[in-house]
Image (tube, rainbow, N blue to C red; front, side, top):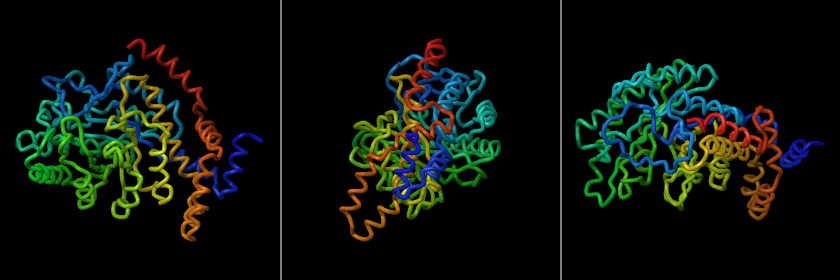
Length: 413
């Protein structure tokens, strides 16, 4: 009997259908972010001061992608090493304009044609993000909530053109394109007026989202604080949760955008009583929103366990959001994607019905005992089988492929 067969039989004793769990875990899409490959630099032709908005990747490990071809090459390598269905998640600054300086409010789908052709050629979907940071018109710390009419109008136009690009992507790929709106707006220190920026943000978002576009699924993302917005963030949890609910828009929860003592796992069952869908960004904060590479840790497992217990995987859009320039970027991707897929599989293998039944009967000691026993079940054998069926490296064998790619490709950049 193989290790997998033994593990499958053990899980069956708990009433868990391992075959169904593997199939489901492989079918759930994970949207893989482009900005890990190039440290959130983007490809636009820049002028002036662009150091603004609280985005920072630390480290200078060799091999950063410098253009679209290199980034797509990195994506191809990553997708060959991770199991399951994936998508690619782009920011507007990854437009390819043939060396021309194109304003972000003038971007068109033609500037993403190579991305669309590539995605269609390998059979994946694209998601999209307006880039409201790293731009002279973001230097004040305010974009869509700016008191400067010219600045605010510029970013409104940017949001509008990005939605049209997302709709075009959706049409070309035959599936929805999730477009996530995150802005860095806020104040570094004591804020005198918290009201006006939020009122302006409501008006700006309403103008951007005014026209429903087929295939374009809009999301809004909250944050507790950012670099340069430690005292006050306009787009807070309360703001965007309320906005999304009142405007039939998807609410985005990033695992790193809360107080260090908060986790989003408990928030899911509360928010999803009212929000039809949520967008999840799997990330790993360390003392602050530092976007470390996602690991298969308790916080990640708790998030997906809640989705599994609530039978809510069909209502969650899963994406990654981390960037680490201090380590091999392909390795960062593979560790993070695999960890997220592991957490999905772990949740689908949980004997949730039995645990709920014990709790309902008031057998809480028995419930805790089974929760503890579950932690040491032979999950690794199930994960290895999933990777085998997906025809990707099993166990640590992917590491040698990463090292070969670094030697042959990344070291030449």
